[in-house]
Length: 106
Image (cartoon, rainbow, N blue to C red; front, side):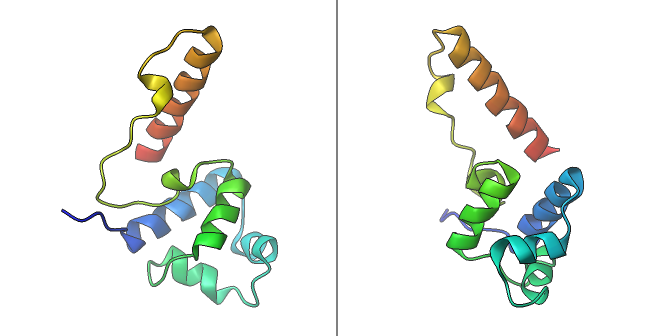
């Protein structure tokens, strides 16, 4: 099956992330320099998707990889750090990544 993005689920995910962090639609509009709030509302309602540039900027704003912002039908990609964990730093990084995955799934 060809991987596709679910705009509606992505919008729900963006709204959840905004609520968790106390970020408003106006905050996103100003952060991205958008002319109106309508674009953000369209994303949240699953009508449209942010551009790649805007997704990239939102990943910085939310401090999450773009993959955790977008919802689709592709299986999760296992991070390379999960394959072989040698150092305590790597273990902490893997635990952090796993926690992000759990928050995304919730």
